[in-house]
Image (cartoon, rainbow, N blue to C red; front, side, top):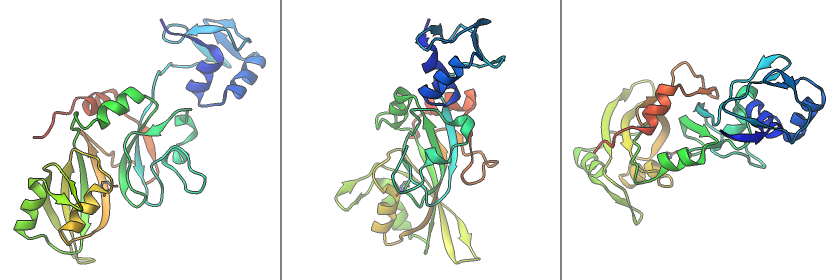
Length: 245
Ligand code: URA
């Protein structure tokens, strides 16, 4: 049983402010189990009571878990006075108070960002002890030597910071612009980690894209800037990805 005030319930499930929720209540369009509700302080059992607005039942979701294909030029934050954020990009139906990115990509990095309002989940997947692997495609200007690849894989130190062993595989050359692609998997999330690792090898990253978090791949149907909820299977998979070591 999870009793919460109806104005809070409406605000979280519809992604509207508490003030707008109160307006809906005053408007006489809200019912709980078929009975009209107009008082903001009335409580509902969020998991059991059937709340409807204008006759349309709301299906209760305690938390949201969202996959976004982050475009370049957008920052991984909830809000920012100057720059567009991943939360700003969410469509109205996925917006609700308290959403934040669980793990950051740099402003120019593209690809898979997970957004949620579940702090416990975010902590779980970001905790260094969990070792949730993240896979990226890194584009660089030259091919690494075998010795450099081994240095990368073995757990290297760059600029006084040590990084755990990582997976690295050459993924081909792009003849259109003379660049080289690497598939990289790391299980940490240190500041500018991949850029600093490649730069330390003398092959700075030109473009970086995140493909996978744990066992879940970015949906290829999502154009840059688009987002959708994770399926139950995807959510399970992110939570239960085995360490790759
Ligand atoms: N490593 C980086 O350097 N930048 C990112 O955005 C992600 C990983």
